[in-house]
Length: 114
Length: 113
Image (cartoon, rainbow over all chains, first blue to last red; front, side, top):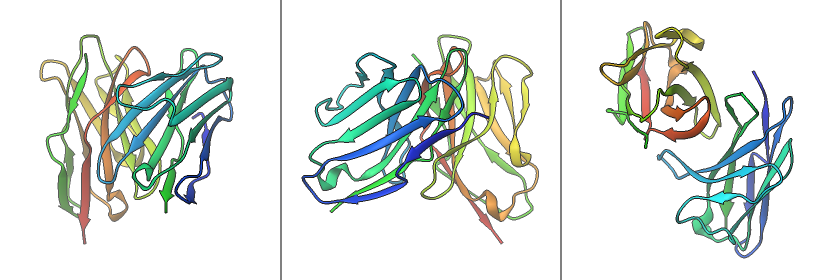
């Protein structure tokens, strides 16, 4: 199946700093990418949907200025957590979908803000 | 609108015994249905998917699921549990093929020796 690579797998950052997470589709063109957040022992919650070349669509309750999403190419989307705080600590997962394909998930990024 | 219910938050079985993880869905469209597995601190791995073809779907690692439209169910089964099956399992529904994923709350499977 198609491969979606997410980097880094783990990151620890200081409170107040920004963290960038990358999501790459390695062998297909991802016209749409999705970003999810997963709290401990809970299911995945969709944060935003991004289509290549256009602004991301954020789910209700997700701060777009806090979670910056860029999808500038057909193989790369980035999620930047700005001015991170301990409550932003979570597991973030991306998925990518091409035209006529199902969505494939990345391996996830464990963010810890100290 | 779509939704997914996973009736059991935690299922515990003995190694070598059958596994049943239950999933019910609601969808305004003919749904696509998926089961994903997540091992601790790992991403999601697709176990199997139903996309309006055969109602009995076989997946990886001996898992299978049956789509029952009359019961709006898509239960996941495996004849014999293995220790490595211990993980979190998510049932997912989408409209159209791979669009608008809605995740169930997850079922944690424990496998006892």
